[in-house]
Length: 402
Ligand SMILES: Cc1cc2nc3c(=O)[nH]c(=O)nc-3n(C[C@H](O)[C@H](O)[C@H](O)COP(=O)(O)OP(=O)(O)OC[C@H]3O[C@@H](n4cnc5c(N)ncnc54)[C@H](O)[C@@H]3O)c2cc1C
Image 1 (cartoon, rainbow, N blue to C red):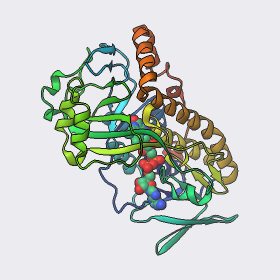
Image 2: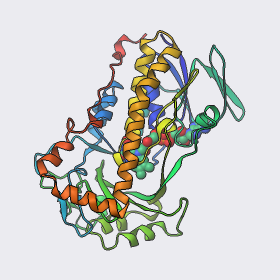
Image 3: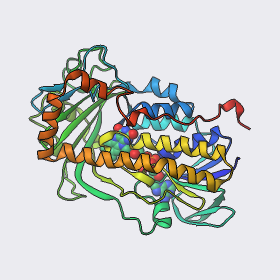
Image 4: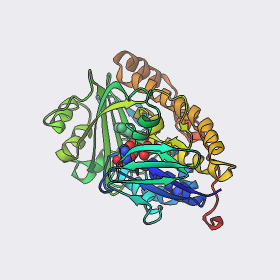
C-alpha cells in the first residue's frame, strides 16, 4: 500500500515520520509553522531503543557518529561533589548525547527535498471516507492520511480530541544551556569518570540536590549541555535575568556546575516549565493519527520523549507497509504504541516526583548509595533497562522502494 500523508510539525517526530514514510514508498508533505528550521533547543540523550529506531530510518550510522557517549547515568553526585555511583574505565555507555539541532539536522537531511513547507500553521482539519484536508491561513491541502506531530500544544489534538485535558504543569521548572567546554575554567580537568574523556574533556553526570538536580551531557564539537530542574509553585514565572537566577541557585554546588552556567552566554539560557499530557484513550481518529509529544508529551526524567516519537514513526510506517488498509494500519499503530508510550510517561512523571520532592529525594539517595555498584551498572546497560530493550519492526531497505 502506498499513498500521500500530510505530517503537521517538523520537529524530531515529524521529520522521523517523513523519513519512515519515504522508506515504505509513501510521499509526505510536512507542514511547519516556524518560518525556518534552525538551531533551536538545547541537548538530549538517546538510549539504545531510539538508536535502533534510527537504524530502521537509515540514519543510525550518522547518529552514532554525531552523538557523544554520556556517562550521566553512571556518575551520580551530591551537590558537595561526593559520588553516589561513579563510572569506571571500561563501563558500558549505551547512551549518546546530542545537541537537539544535530539530531534534527540529520533527520532533515534524510527527508527528500521539497517535502517540508515552513511558515504554514495548520489551523483546521476535516475528513471523510476518502481522505483528510488540513487548512491554514490562505491555503489547504488534502491527503490519504494526516499525522499530527505538532507537539505538546498540538492543534490537531485540540481539533479532534476537544475533551482531552490541556498539558499538566508538574510543579517543576528547568533552566537549560549549551556551552563550549573550552570556555569552562579547567574544563578538561573536570571529568569525573575514570575512563577516556569525551571531546572537550567534560563527562556526563547527574548531581542530586534536595529537591533539585543538575544534569550534564557532553555534546558534539566540544560543547556541554546542562539542565537544572527544580520545584516551582506555579508555571510561567519568569525572571528579568534568567542566567543570574539559575547561577545563584547553583552557586554553592560542586565544580564544574557554577563554571558551566557562568560560561554560557546569557541569551543561550533557556527557561521552561515541565508539563506532560494525561493519557489519551486513543491516538487515532479516522484517518488522523497523533505522534510524538502531540500524543504523549512526557516529563524529561527518563530522557525518552524524542526517542518515543522516533519509535512511533517506525511503527506507524511498518503498519502502513503491512496494510491491508489505512484504518487497519492505524488501529495496529494505536494498539502497539499507546501502552508503551503511556507507561513510559507514567514512569517519567513518577521519577520526576522522586528527584524533586525533598522527602522522596532522601529515600532515593539512600537507595542509590546502598545499591552495590555492579547492580547499579547492570541497570544502565542496554539489556538491563526494560525501556531500552525495545526492538523496532523492520522497514524495507531503500532498494525495494517503488
Ligand atoms: C528539558 C527537556 C529535556 C528533554 N530531554 C530529552 C532527552 O534527553 N531525550 C529525549 O528523547 N527527549 C527529551 N526531551 C523530550 C523531547 O524534547 C520531545 O519529546 C521531542 O522533542 C518531541 O518532538 P515532537 O516532534 O513530537 O514535538 P516538537 O519538538 O514540539 O515539534 C513540534 C513541531 O510542530 C510545529 N507546530 C506546532 N503547531 C503547529 C501547527 N499548528 N502547524 C504546523 N506546525 C506546528 C512546531 O513548530 C514544532 O516544530 C526533553 C524535553 C525537555 C523539555
